[in-house]
Each structure stands twice: as structure tokens, then as C-alpha cells.
Length: 594
Image (cartoon, rainbow, N blue to C red; front, side, top):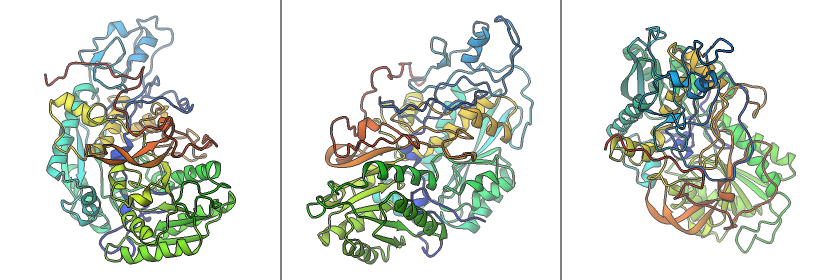
């Protein structure tokens, strides 16, 4: 079994030496990722337009972007609008064939747009309603009538997860989360083409802590033997054993493991899929940002004692496995390459019993080394102690967020020492935020059901996995298999480039070299902390202090980062989009709930 890895630029998951608390950073914050999932219908294998987007786009976890690919759809040439076609058939493909007028698209489709009739700017393209023989049992967990889908939930009260959620007062129960998942599935069944099948949704609560390899493997075996599902959504946050066991049993899973090395996915093709970017992918963005915008300049965003000094960088990273040190070494090597070597590198372990003592050591070493700019790659709770200690030592450096999971979330940043965090900025894979009550999964759920989601704090973490699954599944067509799922996903050009949702692609789009990409998010943006801004955080709690997104959240792919630095510049910065920008307003449709 390979070691679990994390999502930061310099840390990787696992459970060595961290006692029962585990490497918290391994939890992927799809809550704020706001995945706008796409219709993976694919015959067009060209990558999407990679022009940097500077206009806002509403967040979504319920819909998808433009796509004109055809998956396994085939049609004779030159049909003249009357030729045969096969499933799946998207609305745009029907227009291309000249048969859109021959198909009864039903009430779920707005034929004026060719998209499903939901109030979402990223609404999914309509697919032709299925008639005929769907092939019956095309794979394990698939019959002529239903698809068995397991929703994994962590052990209720797991102290590892509670250590994170308690910090920001998240109190959704497993029962509320499952009820929310049921509500999302009902939405997809109403608007997405499932080719004559319904979803048999099963919930499964884990039997061990989030980092328990043995329990995770046993849980995967139990799911396989008891339910024989086609797919599993979710998994233990801090071990890859669950995904490994499911793949060995040829069960597809989405978001079922913390980020792994690329070969983990390749060796388990086509069964394991991620949504967030990998640690190395994020590290690539961080290095390019530092090289182009920070190196060779003074630490002007730090406190009075450092702001007129040339930048001297230091690294603080979470040591959670052997891979953590390897990634830290890689980051240090890249800093050497760009002419900005670390003056000090300090690892820490996430142990609540010793974190304060570690904070004293970390800050003392950074200050003694003359570090003006601390690159932080760790968990979202430890900065409370680090920043408090830095203030106690009257040390006010710049804090660079190295795409660290959840550190870039307003709800957590409000818990840090604000005298310190006013000097914080960096790279995030998350997108510029939109008002969740107006757009995105929360809003779509309330529109569809007539009531807020039962898991109102965590719907953002629940929604991305099914959003990807259903978008791709209807693009596969009636012959549903794991191989077909992979082929459709690889063939898709990806999501719509936007500022309030990340850009996701899979396969061989070329952003990360020649290897196939089994991760989702490819781009990133820049943010800085504004201690005076007021508004709601990611779980709708009003407060003071918010992240500001540079240039309204403009996002960049590898190689596209600009050299102009606009940190702490309010001109063009956005903390949250309360209104959709011109041209991106979702259409208004009556709620099915009345």
C-alpha cells in the first residue's frame, strides 16, 4: 500500500507519528472548491480555451459547462436532419444532426437554450430522453432498472474530523448529511438522463477513525460484499486503503481518498477519481507565483521591522509521512532554482497536546534565521498557535499561503491572530466566492426542494462528488461501465473557465506533462487577507475579516501567471460576489416545490 498524501504544496498525508489525530491537511476542502462539473460526453478531445478569465462567474456544484463532444454517440454522415442517431445524444449534437425538432425533450429541458431548466448559469446540457433497451446489467451494481450507489460517511464523532469542524462550529450530523445526499440524488434523477434507471442510494458509516487503514480496508470489503455497488462517493479522509480495496474489487469511487501520487491512479485505472489538484500540481503554481511576483523584492507586506528588507524565505510544513519530507525537499530545490533559497525549513507534527510548544520552536527559528516571508504548507488549525506565538515574540513576517487546504478558507482564517494574518497572502485552488444562498449547490437544493438542505453547513463538501458522477454518467450513455466512465471523462474538454469555479480537466490535456491526469482542478488564483472586510464566511456566518481575490479572482493555468503583483490592492479585488456579473445571470425558472 502506498502512503496517503495531502493537498498542500509541501505536505502529504499518512498516519506516521501523529497519534490519533492524523494528518488533518489531508482533508480535501471541496466545500469551497465549488466544482462546476461538466457534461463528459466527449468525442472532442481538444482542451478547452485556456484564456485567463477575468469576469466573474457564479459558483455551482449542480451543473456543467458547454460541451459539444459526443462520447460513444455515433451517426451516419450527412443525415440531412432525418438520419439515425444513438444514445447518448446531447442537445447540441442533435442540432448538429438536424434532429432536435424530432425529439420530445420534455419539461426538464429549455429548448431555447438547449440546457436543463434550472436557475444555474452553468446548467447542464439537455440529453435526449431514453427509449428502448438499455442493455440491462452492464456492470456490477447496474441493472435494467437501477444503479446502486454507496454514500460513505465518516464515523460520527471522529475526533480527527471534529478537531477541524469544531474550530469553525460545524455541527451537521451524519443523518443530516445523508438526507442532503438523498435530496441531491432526487434533483439529478429529475433533470439528468439516467437511461431508464433509478438510483439505489445506500449510506455506509465508517467503522474507524479517518486515518485507520485497517478499518478503511474492512469497510471497503464490507461495502463490496454487502451492496455490490457500481460506485462509491466519498471515503476516509486520511488513508488510501479504502480506495485501494475498492479498486481491487473493481468498484468505481469518487473523492474516496486523500490526494495520491499520480501512479496510484494509473495503477487503479479506471476506478479511482479525485476532484482537487495534486500536491505537486499545487506546488507548481506556488513556485511560479513566488518566482514571478515575489523574488528579488522587499517584504513590503510584512510588519514594520521587515517591510523594508529584501525578502528572505522560510518554510513551515506539516510532517505527516515520508512523502511530506520528499515534497518539502522538492519545494526547497525549486526555490533554489529560482534564486530564493529557504533560510530555514521547519517541520511540525499536528499533535494538539504539543502544538503550542512546537509553535514556540517554529517561530523562534524563523525569527532567528532572519526570515521575512514564511511559506506555510500545513493544516488549517495550527496557524492559530503559530500566529499567536509570533505576536507574542513581536515578530510580524509576511505569511505566504502555499495552496494549503482550508487555510485559504475565511471561516478558518478568522480564528487566526489578526495582527499576523493581515500580512497573509498566497495561492489558492479555491475560486472567488459567490453568495451560497443565491447560487451554487445550496441555492439549487433550496430551489428544488423548497427548503434549505438539512446539512446546511456541509452541503458544499457533499455536492461535488455526485455532481461529477451524474454529469459524466449521462454522457456515458445506457452502456454504463467504469471504462466508459473513464473514456467519457477523458474525452471531455473540461469545465467552463471562470473565476468563481475552478477549471477541471482529466486525461491528457497537457497541463501537467505527458502523464494522464486523474485529478480535477488545474488552475489557481491569488488572495490576500483583509482584516476589516465584513460579510458571510463559507458556512454563511457573518463576521469580520475576509479573503480578497486579486483581479476579481482571475485564474491561471501553469505557465500563465502574470508578473504584475496586486497584493493588498483593493482596486479590482473581490471578497464575495453577491450579484452575478453582466451576461452570467442564471435564467429564472419556477421551483418544482412551488
